[in-house]
Image (cartoon, rainbow, N blue to C red; front, side, top):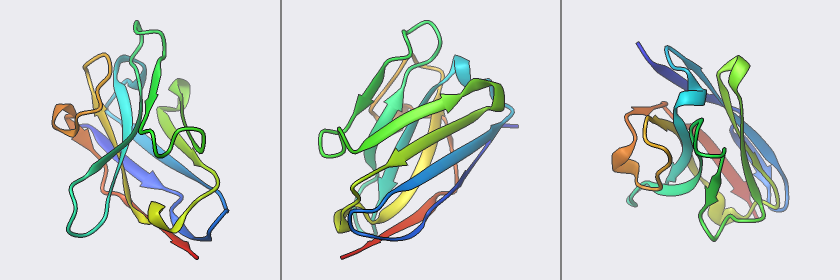
Amino acid sequence: QVTLVESGGGLVQAGGSLRLSCATSGLTISFSAMAWFRQVPGKEREFVCAISRRGAGNNTVYNDSMKGRFTISRENAKGTLYLQMNSLKPEDTAVYYCAATRMLISVNRRQYDYWGQGTQVTVSS
């Protein structure tokens, strides 16, 4: 059974930083492309960033609105995915989800097979 559990969300002031973690089990994350998505009420789940699976060069891809502020990384030995978020803005407020797919890499949420339950990030102005 595959499980993904996010942590590290919370309340932060604009300009601040947070580091989200996604602990996995039942999954070899080096053989999975991993991603972060986010969602606010009433809107579709939005792609944040992704990192490719082994064999695809450990490539990363970012939503343009987060490029330069967010960094995705993973620690394969721990089965953990991270999202370092800097220079946070109020519009970054959302529930953040991690996801996994056996594709090489994808920005399409429909191509992700496994999801965590999400962690709330709130950025105050």
